[in-house]
Length: 199
Image (cartoon, rainbow, N blue to C red):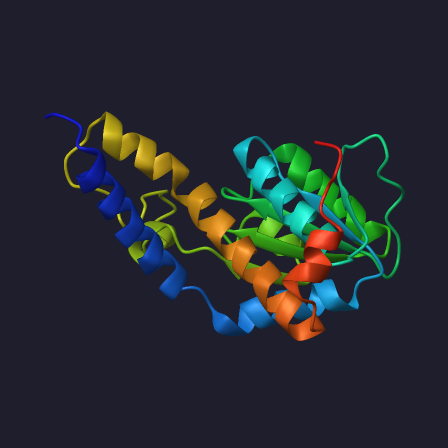
């Protein structure tokens, strides 16, 4: 079947809207509380998810939050009063799970965004919020079938299945930044005053 951009993009947008509608509002507020209370925020992820975690870091920096990306050579030690903000779709990436465990051992707080709250990374969170890309039956059975999976297999469906978490995550963290700006009373003009100028 011929790929049709409008048809496939509309299908994906509908899926993403359904996923974000199903996210827990209390968890969203809890994440804002954690970021607001932290002395410094450390963001972490792996692969494509790390790129989105870094996008959140950029927004937090523009909001005046002290923020670091785990793995950067300039990232300092994490300690009590700091927050590790972790994103992991599977929640089972070894490196990310190790970071979360070490952050807790160092006395820091851990906030997690994941599709699987019962995963190793999810269980490390003081606050763990689910991005519900998998349907309830699949989660109970331990399968990773997306809630919005297409019935017929194919390249388009497979790509969509593997990217729903990252796409939903980007929208979610942008909403977090907007809500945090609203809570802190920070204007767009203030944010732009902190925008990178070496570009």
